[in-house]
Length: 74
Image 1 (tube, rainbow, N blue to C red):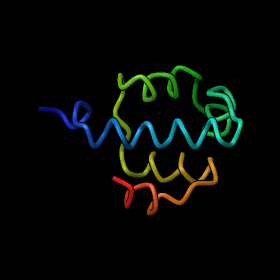
Image 2 (cartoon, rainbow, N blue to C red):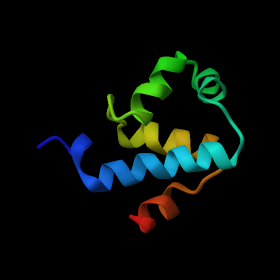
Image 3 (cartoon, one colour):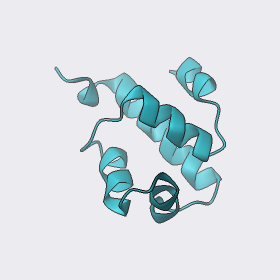
Image 4 (cartoon, rainbow, N blue to C red):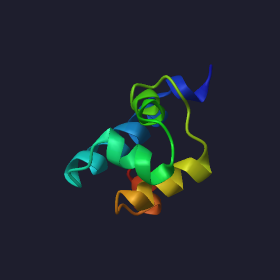
């Protein structure tokens, strides 16, 4: 089974979505900061695209979240 479907991966993405909303940022805001289309953010938030570790860390930092603490909560 692909890791995109595991409960742990889903919790990881939910943590990123929560951090984005807590920071009052839109998907478009994050996409612009990453120099990516808004659909990039939409796809990983809807579990249609898997993030690699480098992308995860970059996104967490953009959101003002500590990547290590997110991982600890899993």
